[in-house]
Length: 115
Image (cartoon, rainbow, N blue to C red):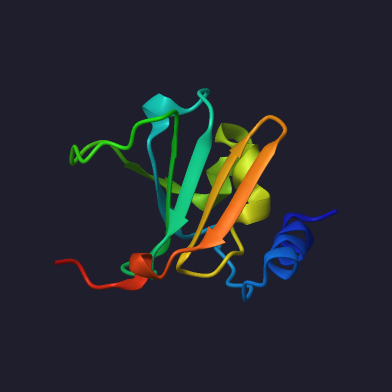
């Protein structure tokens, strides 16, 4: 099954509109955390060539300005393929995945303007 079909299936299962994350768009990935569990993802509104996704692994989310690095969506297949099915979730959605665990929910606070 293609990544787009998997993404549409995940959106349908959880009741999210499908909003494609294009291969040419960037997302923020905490590359140093990859390989840990669980994997977290949250999607804010897209801006400036990004798709709005931020992804990190492990228990802690840092507010350090260099915690997230920009990565093109097209590179996720080799860097973090397990998140590909979730990338069609619309802004305001989050996921948390680990072996034998999947949590997906809508979080309207992700769409609020920064304070």
